Image (cartoon, rainbow, N blue to C red; front, side):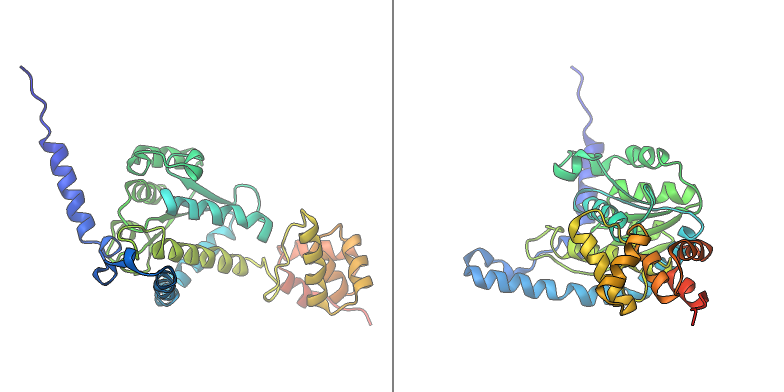
Length: 319
């Protein structure tokens, strides 16, 4: 009677157990072993105390984040894309940040992309085994036709998620810039990437639930990567969000307020400028500050690559 050799699978499981046992994000907080016996407010305060540790941990990674931003911005300025890749919570964080870039910074379709193991279904529902599918990681990136000016950011709390590591390795093989975002030092993901951003958040309140501190750290890091990159690309004027898309009433009101804050003009002048500019915030600001008509302002903006600061400084206000 034939028998099935399971030694290979057993060795693989033992290896995975050993890997996880050595990760800080998988460790148990023994001082919180009785958390289920604590009062509700005490648990809330304990969780808040844990969350307070995240921002300093991200701050410690500031040099690595800044280096990655400069490299990303250089490539995006040449037409490259920013592509986030992850599984589970990490993948959802990437999809979230990518989806918020068009309305916030008026990025072009496909300029910032979020890939999640298991595809769009995995945004709402867990897809069993998706994070282990290295072939899918390669296929997902191949579908995007990577070029050297693209950046692939692999995200994984453990830093060992096969889907994310495989994506970063494949991207590197295609000549793209690679970044690895994890919560454990010396991770395979960090080792595979050009830029390793390893935010050490330590053990979670609930052992192994890396949607907590590690997930919060990922959100902060991705916020920083995309926002500072967009600042470097001229998508803001000072700290004003001047490249927003006015796609609803709230955003139209926000656009009006931003033009007011940028120019100091009164309500009527702002309304006229926005109307002449077809609602385009940068053009409206330049018409007021440069004393230009909308057509001239649009030409000057185009000549400056859409960088409002540069356009304002090059405009010669008429006396």
